[in-house]
Structures are given as structure tokens and as C-alpha cells.
Image 1 (cartoon, rainbow, N blue to C red):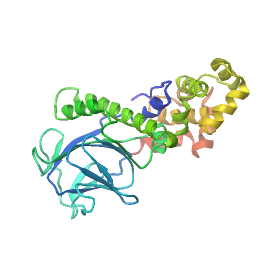
Image 2 (tube, helix red, strand yellow; image 1 turned 30 degrees about the vertical axis):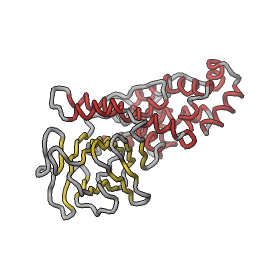
Image 3 (cartoon, helix red, strand yellow; image 1 turned 30 degrees about the horizontal axis):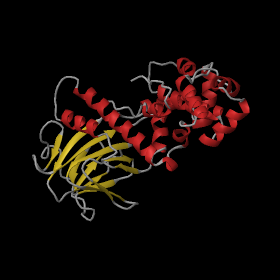
Image 4 (tube, helix red, strand yellow; image 1 turned 90 degrees about the vertical axis):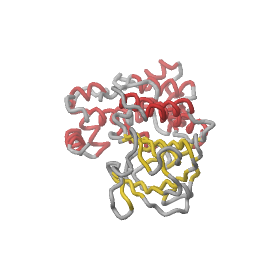
Length: 321
């Protein structure tokens, strides 16, 4: 899948974990139940639809999830989801979304129900939608670094209509359904993260808070929309209508680093993502992200990531999907 470039910093970062054959499941479990999740997934969305659930991490207080709430969990650390926070797990979800009892007996086939439905109850149990992203690439890594390990957006701030539509579509088995579900999951995630960053304004990433500033926000949009353009601080300042010194000072204060340092990091993150596309030559990647030659990109990339682009590509492409 080709990496898109957008002028919206949040949209740009979300382009990394854009769902592509994401794991989506409707679980229906008769209480009491407790599921230990050890799948090491980088990003998971939990959407309780009927019955209260508890999100229990090994290193934090349990979080109560009411129907309508949306929780986002950043991996790879394990956690437990249960009908009661005090219950010990009786099910384990392992890498590859393989479910077993705590003793190792397979549960995938025995608990398989209708289309994308799994659990112990057919209709009247606690119901939850689970969407799991398999995030790869440094662009996705930048987003994950901006998220807390766990976040919950309450139902009155969650995208209720989108979640209801996702719930209806999960149970369908029609041509192109996987693409429909991927895009719906993306919309839910984007809306939830936007709501979270807005309500947690003081704790939101600096680049997100800076978007509200008329000067720095405009600058960020320029850098994300055209990363390959030969930007300078003077050129950016002229475009957004302030002095060079004013832009440098304001950008650094709000984002936490100077404009050119931010641009370099964003260019190299895009390069890391593009290197996962085998058909792209190193020269093509370099031009796409604003480096005149493959050598120039290699020098900057090795300085930032500690390995050459060729080595990075070999190691990432050799990893199993």
C-alpha cells in the first residue's frame, strides 16, 4: 500500500497505521469472563456494546468501560479485559489472534460463532467489538509514541453513529467487506484520537496543540503537505507571513524543536515507510522525501536510525507479515 502525504499532521501520522486487513471481531461472552491479551499487537480498539467491561493493565489501575465507550490500547504489553476486574483470566489471546484456555487448549474453533463472531454466548452475553492494527513503519511509530498506554473516550464523546455502523458491518460477509471494515475502523480511530487529544489538551502531543496556532499550524501543514520541497526557515516564514526569527522562536516553543529539525524527522519517517515498498528504488525514495540523492538520504538515515536504508529495508521486508 502506497504511503500518502497529507497536509494534516494528525492525518499524516494516522496514515501509518491505516487498517489494511485489520483483525476485527465481535465477541459475545456470558459473564463471568476474563480474557488475557498477549498478542503483542501495537494498537487495539475496544468497543463495548453490551455489558460493562474492565480493562486491567499489569502496571495501572483498572479502567471501567461502559457500553458506548471506546478504549485504545497501545502494545505490545499484555493486559486483561474482564467482566470483573478481580477475576483471574480463563482465556488467553496469543500472537496471531490465537485463543486458548490458560492451560493451552484451543478455543478458536470451539468458540467460533457467526461471521466474525467469537465467544460463549449466541445473543444475550456481554458484547464487544475488537479491532486490532498491525502497525509497521516509523510513521506509525511516531503516532504510537504520542499515545498513552491506554486511553478511554466516554460514550458521550465517542462517534456513536460510526461505531453502530461498524457493528452492523462486522456481521456481514459480502464482496469487498474487508475494505469497508478497514475504512470504518480508521474513521473510528481518527475520531476517537481527535476527541482524546482535544479533551486532554494539556497532555496532547506538542505538534497537535501547535496546530491551533495560526502561524505554527500553517507551517506544520506546509511541511506535511510538501516534505520534498526545499524548505528553509526564511521560505516558510515568508509563506506564513512572519519574520524568520519570529517563526523559528514560535515553532520551537510550541513544537519543542526547530522547524528544520522537525522536517528532517518527518522526512526520514516517511522514508522508512516508503522503504517497505520493494518496487521503490532508493533514489526514488530520496526524491519523494526531499533528498537530492540516495547518498544524501543514506547519510541522514544512518545518522538517525543507526543503520543504512538498505539494511533497514532488508530487515523489515524479511519479517513475517
